[in-house]
Amino acid sequence: MRTKRSHPLNLLAKNGNQGTHSVPLTIACLNTTGPVLELGCGIYSTTLLHSICGKHERKVHSVDHDERWLAKFSSLKTDWHTFEHVPGPSSNLYLNEFLYRFIPTRTRRIDLLWDQIGTGEQWGLVFVDHLPLARRVKEISRLRSSANVFVIHNTDRIGNFLFSFWQYLDSFPYIYEFPATPGTVVCSDTVNVRAFFE
Image (cartoon, rainbow, N blue to C red; front, top):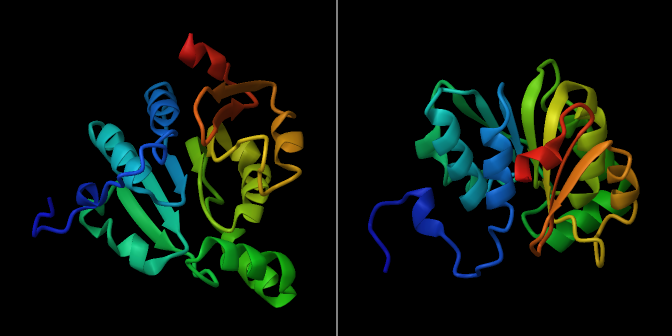
């Protein structure tokens, strides 16, 4: 039943497998300190991070390529939860991916914008769930030295859009695959993330 008030929590999808990252993201957030970078806003992740971090006014910076989608979370904006729009070629997953991978001028433009996100900060937690998918390994690689823990959504080994994705993830000394599909991985160079789940 729809309510007249527009609030992100009213947008919850009926598809039960979209929030499979919620449990590992919650556990990782509760077991880390410091600012949180959210790459790709979502009904589950953005509201979840806002709720957990709000208790301590822990800094959260949420970034998305779709300005209309980002606007749906405007009621969550505070001095400790900030939002940023990084223009993308399309809100359509497949068109976005195609334009990024095969149109060099688009690739360069998108890379220039995303390469600035999250720089100059030491992040306690970075959540990776943004488009284009082909940027995800780039984001993890460039933020690796400035992030304590990563939570990465859509990491299924079979049918993954990024063929080098797992080859890169396997380079982390600490890694945990949450047992749900679509897959979510928690990984770190310095923190034993498996201990979060034991």
